[in-house]
Image (cartoon, rainbow over all chains, first blue to last red; front, side, top):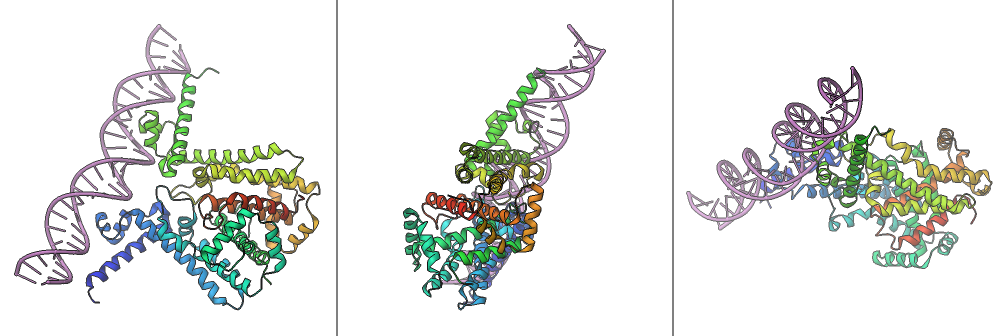
Amino acid sequence: MAATVRERRRQETTDAILRSARTHLEQAGVEGVTLRAVARDLDLAVSALYRYVDSRDDLLTELLVEAFTEHADAVDAAVDEVGPDDLPGAITAGLRAYRAWSLAHPAQFGLAFGAPVPGYHAPAERTVAVAVRPGSRIMGLFATAYERGLVDADVLAARAATLDDGTAAGFDALAARQSYPLPAPAIALAVDAFVRVHGFTVMEVFGQLRPLVSPADAYYEQLLREVVTTLGLPR
Amino acid sequence: MAATVRERRRQETTDAILRSARTHLEQAGVEGVTLRAVARDLDLAVSALYRYVDSRDDLLTELLVEAFTEHADAVDAAVDEVGPDDLPGAITAGLRAYRAWSLAHPAQFGLAFGAPVPGYHAPAERTVAVAVRPGSRIMGLFATAYERGLVDADVLAARAATLDDGTAAGFDALAARQSYPLPAPAIALAVDAFVRVHGFTVMEVFGQLRPLVSPADAYYEQLLREVVTTLGLPR
DNA sequence: AGAAGTCAAGAACAGTGTTCTCGTTTATGC
DNA sequence: GCATAAACGAGAACACTGTTCTTGACTTCT
């Protein structure tokens, strides 16, 4: 186990590289994370970094996964704090954290959800699983709410009425794939809600909301209340 | 007027530069638009480009303004085709074109609405006016619909009930600034709608929707119908 | 202790944006 | 029409970037 004065040092510099890259990402955006800047921080030659990182793209992927993970962790923490007894409250808290983290970490958010970084294509096998976490968590809460009979039947029926067959089939496939115990109209409601929340967050973080909505906090809180309502949940 | 064998040639190469840059943007993303690639296309030395362009950032700004303009033009064309007699139809057509153009021009859309390009900060004085055009156009249609009494009073009252004072004040300020003849609750409805449309479009173009919604066309059409309904408009 | 694996450094290559200088070409003023 | 001024194009150079390769030193294992 202590096969590792070396392994430990290796882990340390690997961590230091990631920390340095993250700092540059936060302070100067994606283009600020350059191998030479990281090398300067660690007092290393640029070529030495390649012992720890395959390429700059690899480093970006690491930052991307870290961003997705922290984002999802923030949502999870907020959900857990409310607990499973108050599902509408938990959903609200999770979606509130969804936006809050994004505003607090705009560079990471941009890397994760912005326009695909030029030249760099994130490897799906590393990102998809973690990118989907927040949505899955919220969907899970909504699923148990549905199982507990909390979702208003009228709301569900109304959504079913506006749902065309093709879209419904797609939602059924999604439910089967992720094994959500939800009918297509319920999935539709959840997707509707998520699009509104993510859309608002994207617009705010990228600065496209400022000309429209001035006190964004209050507007978002109202959006959350309306989302709960349109999900057919009480309160 | 013909003070210009020179001026005409100058205009021609300026156009050629922009066309070349645009091609590279579409084919290789932002990072693909490089001065040296443009110079190769035009059989010019890189340094010669600086006679026509202040910097690479300046070139990107040009592309950005072009993207905003074409996007807005597409929306305008769709709206004009329907005409002012069918306002819900015009709004639907405009928002349909909003998404269609974005899907057809993902690179331009990413440049315009994606995460701020690293290192490059678009000069607001050149972009804001044109970036706001589609939203203003839709808002204008909604305003005349409101003046014609097409907006359902109950829908308006319901939105007024959920509107807090701070947000309402912000919307009133927006209406005054842009001289929209709309009360705060009506502006709220329009902003709600725009957030949904833009949010959906962003998610789809950036690939964050594929895991959720499989036949996106049908879903979007349904979204448009619901948007018209939640705007309090008939049909 | 010797062999094998690991690490760091340096130089080099192909890119990038940008600036400067140097001739050449064009348009303008007399 | 000619000289002057402005505009233009090309080339070299500088400071960056990511990446690769070679060389030498160090640590670990047998």
